[in-house]
Amino acid sequence: MSGVPAELAGLASALGILRLAPLSGGVEFLVFRGTGPDGEELVVRMPRARTFHTANNVGVEALLLLDQEQRMAEWLAPQGFPVAEVLGRHRTGTGLPVLISRFVASDDGDPDWASVGALLATLHALPAPQPGPVLQYGMPLPDLIAKRLPERFRRLQALQPDLGGLPSPAAIARRLALVPARHALLHLDVRRQNLLCRGGLVRAVIDWSNALVGDPRMELARMSEYARIPENGLDEALIRKGYAASAAEEGVADCLYRLDAAVMLALVFLSVAPRPDLAPAQTARVAELLMTLGAGWH
Image (cartoon, rainbow, N blue to C red; front, side):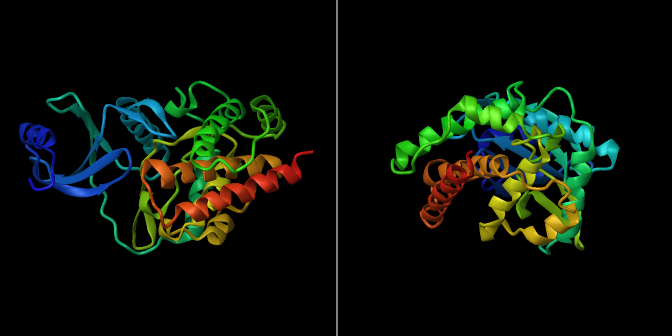
């Protein structure tokens, strides 16, 4: 099995999975495609490590994220939301957790972007699942942002010392808590790569590792920041049109949500998965948002 780690090849052989081959890969996970013993096409997702230690996520257990992927799929599918069906979890010989899902056929064409916006609105109208997402750490969203944004920003400042400063964590939490918000499930990684589409329709939304529960404005703010990067392949205007923009922007809160996304992306491009072609513009975007935040912080 060319390009397949030996430990995964061994597990595949034991499970009767044939023709396993690399399909895609990200910062934290590798994804492979194979054929099950009954001829069914499968997707196998394996982490690069048992525990992730990056500038954005320190000490996050891969098993917990794979468990979350399964829980989200099993919770959303009965409600008609398009997800990939999870078939089971296993471990390699060295103990790495592996998630096996049913393969979802897709093509390279763009989806109807307005329907993507409507799909997000549908997601946000559902009751939030329990237990909460892994990266929420049991906190309300305002408290989580007030904790992680300054922590990540300090790591970014170590790489880019001239960025300026943030309000205090307590002040951030207070401002976000003032904004009326539903407690919705947020995907928070809406990119073309995470939308499996065929014939213009979204067949499955994948990769729920970044999910949180809280203000839907955060989803729209992060989507907007992602849309600034061409390779994410998003049409922000049509997505917002399909969503119907029922969650109007809220000044400081929206800026904080955008800054949370921009700082995360800057750390990715500078440290986690270096991209010298994208890092300068992303760092400049952080500086721009800091100026906007300072101007609106009254």
